[in-house]
Image (tube, rainbow, N blue to C red):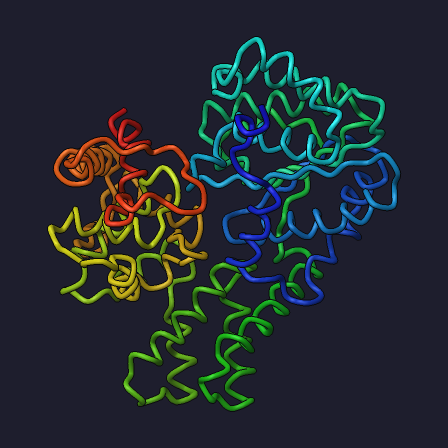
Length: 461
């Protein structure tokens, strides 16, 4: 039953986010503990709180900060539990209402093993169908029964990025969250982090206490972005040998142009380093650095376009293919999987190490992609939305990289099907069920096999 319930471990997801995004700058996020509505929520005056902000404004890092703070409170309070889930629109295991609920249930049972008694009877009746999207209602009833159990007096719950869930799934989840918080006001304490889009989130959550993350109007928030820039600049620009005066001037320009957006500041510094490295030892002067920063686009969309326009003409075709796969993949691909996918798409052969070959190509993608562990991911959900934009770009070079979802899905489905029929399954059937720590020898030459087997139908729909 627990094996069927498990989809992703929120604890591992939080750890991976920390590893990918980097740990927060020292002294940041403290302002939320002095905000009136947040203090009221912490004091149990309200069961539900909604924090919103635009892309790149630090919502996920605030959510991680809250999990740390609430963990301490839960440990101080007897009979308390802490649940959290970090949604991710780039990963099908973390972007549906059922995925969120399965993560919360798994965490709750880990902390309270006796709560399995609420799940087992329903599982025995419905089997593995209980954990599929159509059975969300049944699974939610199980969750409500657990929340009502008197052996736990308080359940803290942190949900980040629910706006990244699939739209139909999101509407259902938002309604249920609002209802459970109103029914169990003193028992279930929920804080939600998201953008205010799509519109039905605002409609559903409009009557609950709302805090807007606006670092430009929040004095301590402005201090956070300044601390982040100083902290990140020390790590990122350490090898650039800028004078102290240049560094101070650079940080001030970044602070003014970032407009409270952590992601923009991070991308700008990373692009500065890449620009310096591309100059073959001829460093920019202090004045050139300042002018270069002042000419950067100030929006995230503009920054993504800028990065794509830096890709050399000879690499644009393969980078466009990489971006299509990363954007449309049902789950994050490993380096080996992506390498095999690009080989199949481009008709190339990387031999026995496609992961190493694709790593070389990733260098041309700039900072729009990241490698997290062995997985290749977009730098942010907003990058996915930019690449999937519906409006054509009059600039032919940036338009070349725009991902047309239907065309890309059809291409990936065809490549996966051909991969199975013409190569990896040519010698006969393969048992795709987990074989333990040692994968079957026949799987090793075909890194894209398991993805193709399990996910090609999803690209056909």
